[in-house]
Image 1: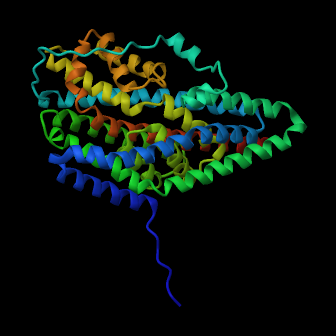
Image 2: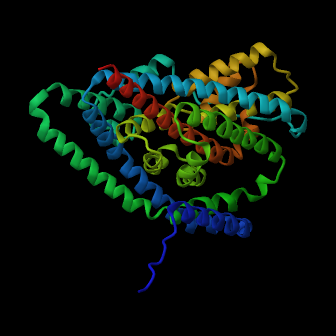
Image 3: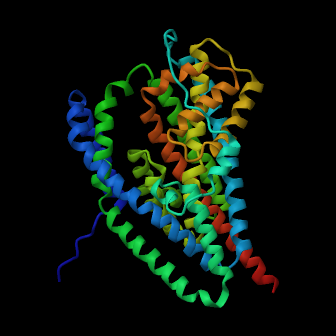
Length: 410
């Protein structure tokens, strides 16, 4: 009897593709035009397919999750826990970023600050952000892939289905069937992940190979050490203490999503893989389908670390010593800005401009790090999606404990 060939897991396949992309990218440093013209398009095709499936998955999985809860109060309970967790971890992230920036401050390169120009994108006023969460058109949120508006639509539809009572069975069956169809479609697309990862990462390495070992290497190293410290300390403790999952199990099951996020630098694009990973960690589908899309939009722990490191670096380049009150201001601004800039293209840069302005640092300093922003982005996206997954593990465990307490009181 022939032994069946053991297939490589998705995590191993993505890892092999990631290593291959780095090696090939470094070999093509002098031929980056070829990588950009002929390899990157295949990565873009894959990312387009992932983005195409994200909207229906978010819409129908949230609706399906709400319907299965059959309780509007439970949705509110999950939403509150999610937002509180995201705000707390973002505050920790910016503190770690500032601490790391101060530790590395003496090692940062001396970079000329004359003739620097950077035009900061105008920050959207907070109240406008609140208004823009609510859709004014049925089709527009889906066309523009506006995740916050899609979440609001899914909540409204889900609540409405619950409230019409006994007549809703056919609608429930229809929503669940459509959810299953889109999930199956997602599985098919995700089988192409290793090819997508290689084609997305290889051109980035080919274009930035020389820059990575250039003058900004120490700033990049500081940011990546802070990313690592935040993930290992904050997420490990949260997953173990609040989520009931060991750190080893958490990171082992998260590997496919982590590697995909690192190579694609897209939180929304990583959403389908993140959903699969959290389900393997035992997170209820109804919770992951609500927490993860919200996190992909408003949770920016990695971006907050980037703010802290870059603020210290830019201040040192201009010969400015940040005081303790200024650092506290940075923590508050970055934490609130993580929600205030939700859904804004290039949110990292917009947030950094807001943070620098809040403590009187020259916004032109962003030009110092803009050249290697993609390298920063790969790390901060990885931290962001890992934080989303950690939140879903924590919320799922807390909700289970709450239901168990209710059951024991009956």
